[in-house]
Image (cartoon, rainbow, N blue to C red; front, side, top):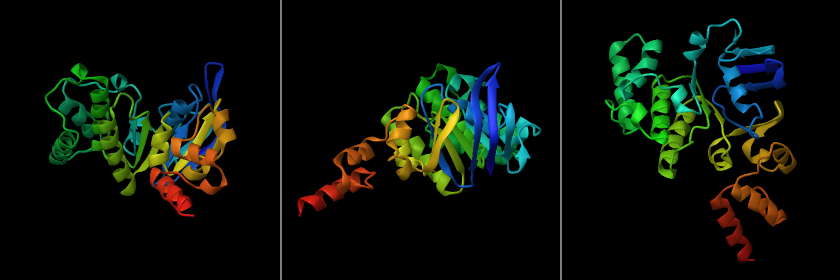
Length: 266
C-alpha cells in the first residue's frame, strides 16, 4: 500500500532521513518510535506527500508521491498533526468537520450524516469555537474531522498528547475498531504503553535511519536496538525480561498474573 524505496530527505543541507526502505500493507497497525529528532514526523509526512523525497521513491497504491497531487493522496490518507492548532481552520466544530468532508464527498446528505455522527461519538458541541477549547479537546476535534472522512490509511502523530486517561482510552478504542475494520494505521508515538497495547508492528527510527521493523512482541525484546533509539520497552515486557527465563514472552498484565500464579503453585 505504502512503499519506501531507498528514501532520503534533507532540510536544506541537513539530512533528516537516509536511505530508508520499508512497506506498509493494508490493515497494518504500525507504530513508529525513536528519540526526539529521530525523523519520525518527517517519515510520516513523506507517507502522504506533504514532503517529497530528496532521493528514492515513495508510492501509495502505486502512485508516486512526487508526481501525484497531495489533494488526491488526501482522499486515501488521513493525517492527524501533533499540534492541533496547525490543523484547525474553522470557527465552529461542525464547520471544522464539514471542511474535510466537503473535500472528499459530493453527497450533501452523507456529509451531514457523518459530521453529526462524529459530533455525537466524541461528545462535542458542534456550535462551539474550537479555539476556545483545551488542547486535549482541540486534539479530539481534529481527530473527529479526520475520522469523518474515513480514509483508507490513518497517520497519527502523537494522537494522545494532552488527553487524560479516559479520553485516551476512548480515542484508542475508536482507532482499534477502525483498524479491525480494515483501516491501515501508522502511529508516531513516544508512549510505549500505547505501542504495546495497540500496535501490531513497530518501526524503530534513530538518526534518520530505520534500525528495526517487526512484530511488536518481538521488537520489545530487542533491548540494544531500543536503547540505541533512546526508548525502553513497555513496563510489563521490561519487567518480564528482568525476571528472566521463566517469564519469557510475557507482554500483558494478564499474562504476568497467570505466569506468577502458575509459578506459585509449583
